[in-house]
Amino acid sequence: MDRAYSVTMGDRGRLVVPAQVRQHAGLTAGAHCCAVTWSEVSQKVRAAGGDWGLARALLDSYKLGVLDATAADAEWAAMRWQAGQGPSLADRFCLALGERLDADMLTADTAWGTSGRVHQIR
Image (tube, rainbow, N blue to C red; front, side, top):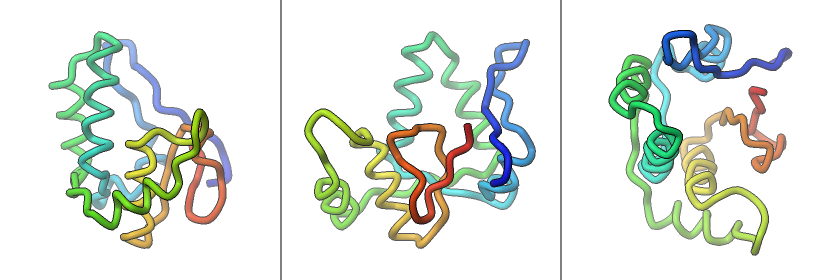
């Protein structure tokens, strides 16, 4: 992506995902996330006092597929663990899924870096 985009909370408490981000992420044609990451997203929305039903409906409207984690994903994620630094367990599962699917990965988390198929959206 040539420009930085952000996902924001709109004036009605709804998530706003710019069209350029949705298009680049493939969200208009269907995209995937790992079930482990889905759990973390749900947790973070709830922890922030958000409405998970609303957030889930938004994500569902983009045809976001939630894929099961595999043993290979778990091993890939474990091999990239670093004490006290780096991406969270859920993030490492997301990266493992991206590797398994040979897909580009979008994130706003700088801990993911910018190498390979990882693209920062902030």
